[in-house]
Length: 219
Image (cartoon, rainbow, N blue to C red; front, side, top):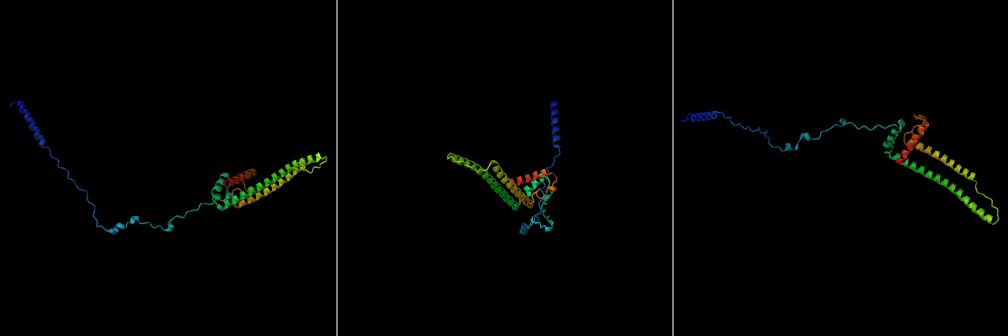
């Protein structure tokens, strides 16, 4: 045999022997997971679930609700606080809002009545003037001298001035009565006097006007 061939066969034989000597690793055995403990079926257990039962709470354990603290309108000294108080307290009081609406109607009715009276005086003055001129023209056409009984311009002015002064006094009396009503309703700046206000007389008057304008808009 060719020495080279013999060497190749020998090498192949050695390689085969080495492969067959490899240790075979046994297959891993599968261990099934433990089964849960089997319990006997009891229908009573299906109906009772302690964790689902309502928990009883003793009344003393419930914290009582605390009512919001009522603000004293006499303590209000600035417009933002007054605005907040009126919109949050007064507007949610049906009795107060009803009274404010009646006051507004009462004021409007009197103002209309006073204005109509003034207009009537002015119209009467104007009509008497035109009527008197027409009458004088007729009398003169017959050669008869006429004597004017018409009020003079000064007399007309005095009559109108007297009426305006009367209306002014009535208006002041009405506003005074309304201020008393607003005080009874605990409206800010009407529950205190000018002497109690931390500011000037002009500021006190102006802030009261703002309150009245706000109430007028809300009613």
